[in-house]
Length: 464
Image (tube, rainbow, N blue to C red; front, side, top):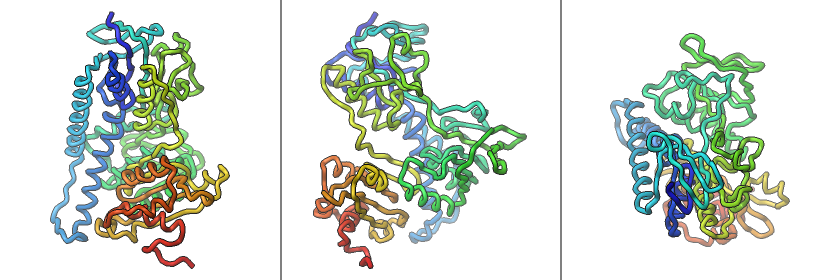
């Protein structure tokens, strides 16, 4: 039986980050992964969807090439080649993660890790059968998978999840997207740009229900202009294949049909049959593993990170949790803080948000003021031909400190980093406005919004 200081179960962004950090701290570490390193994010989520979204964005630019003084005589997108490009990018990044793990001396075992004791793991399927390893500390990072509902009759062909959507060879003429959350809206942008008739069915009153209401409403209008039909407050009773069509039956509404249906209603945690109950590890009502702010379970020496803890299911959150767990497994005293997690949505235009919305800030007792600036008034955005969207800063009237921000527009997912750091450092709107922002850049929109907090934005008309 091979022995390690730490064993990590799962090679996603949380798991491989934790393994590398443990190795950097000088310990012997084993990473157990049943598939490919990189987890959902790299193989079936963040990276593949962004690769396809980039293809869709290139197509959108070409369609408007004449506006840039470029004549294009023929436009012929090939989804199969887009998928091929996506696969190459994913393969390169998987290889890169593998190289990093090897460079730090991390032992990688292919198989399914199951806890058999506080300090033992059975790696099912490894070396053709299975091997047992011993570890002083264990970090569980087994991730999640698309949530499935029996009434939706998912068959992987006509009724699919995001996993199958990323590997289509041919596009349908029409598609129903069940769920108007982040995944659903990102796929709506991809498919609609490629000429697919998209219908989004959302149970709640607004798409992107976790974001500021204004953001969801603006994206709804943008998608509508692109021909995307959005049916909010749609209770689906059943989805099934009827002939060559997929039909969604709705409570109190006419059924909706299309060539295909994509189910994007959330994710289920991979916590079944990995020895949690046998070890006495506490779980919540959704099956999530309960941890403290040190990422440790109720069983001393066993930690859990990423989607399985049911907190914020984002790759960058999992990676940070991995660093916290690794430090503590090696005798440290690090704590996880969820108060400042940036959210990035790669729709077109992009959406980045962090901290409190105006409504949430008011609920917490803050007297707030807002700073707004439209990309329509920004020189760089005009030059790029990407003027949809705005920057909104939520500011505490009493202290002038930034409480939150919502950005919709070009490169919003990059721009949100400045505001995240500003909130982390306790910066004020005045301090942002005192900071020289290069011209012409998109970041000037944040500067202008900070000036607008005090009604002194140079490139905004005087308020009445």
